[in-house]
Amino acid sequence: MRFCNATRCMNRLVVTAIAAVTLVGVSAGAHAAPVFNQENPLAAPADGEVYAYLDSGWFQVGTGVVFQPFTSYTITSAVGRAIGGDAVTSGSIQAWSGAGFIGQEYSGTGTWASAAEGEWADNSFAFDSTFANAEAGEELTVLVTNYHGPSAAQAFRAYFDNFRVYANDELVWSSSFEVEGLDADAEGELADAGWWIPDPLIGGLVSTTPASVTAIPEPASAALLSLGGLLMFRRSRR
Image (cartoon, rainbow, N blue to C red; front, side, top):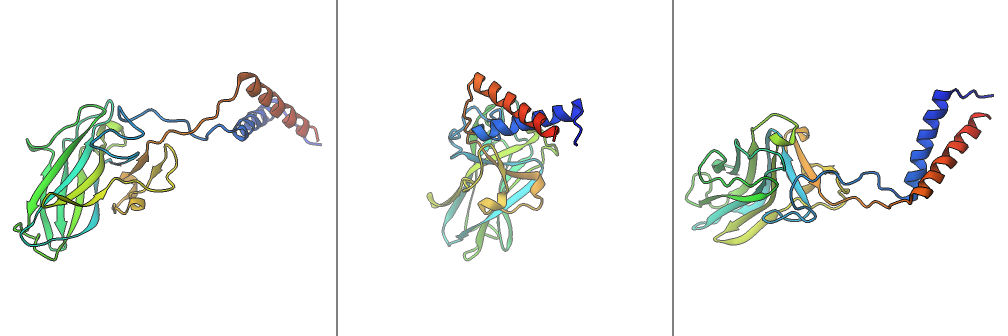
């Protein structure tokens, strides 16, 4: 004979009630508080429903764009500011090649555009094939930094989305971090979108797609809870 004291029976009741509700169709994760004023999709100049965040450090991507002679290039990224968060004060958008560093747009300069709270703003770095390390035949690597932290708090995070590369004003590469299979309100890895980060704990992806929640009428919920409790107490007497 199994003995069920009050504490054990209560724990079983709670577990059973949760399981019963889940079976009826409540999503495992309700939509979290939004980080931006408009999500699903994100407001321009961001794009889609997924953005990248960076607490403190850097991440990069090889674009596959090969430099050509007599060509000007522009790297543009939407940079976000969270609701209740700080503007990026020590971040950058950088251009590199296999030969080395080409240049950057740094948030400490007067040309950096800071987004309003809960919004996005484009920032760009422009250069041409006469810059050092941008010689014809080299491949462009885009690298972004944020050294505002370190902190896991949203106020110290930098947010990036909708990267674009233009050659002579023609779009030749883009990345909005949209990845298949990323669950609603879930975080993903930058590697899933083709980007590389030295430490996955300092940055990642966030899907803003709201979770689908199936509402359960109050009487039905109460009935499920009662049924779950009865089942557990019956099992406890076996």
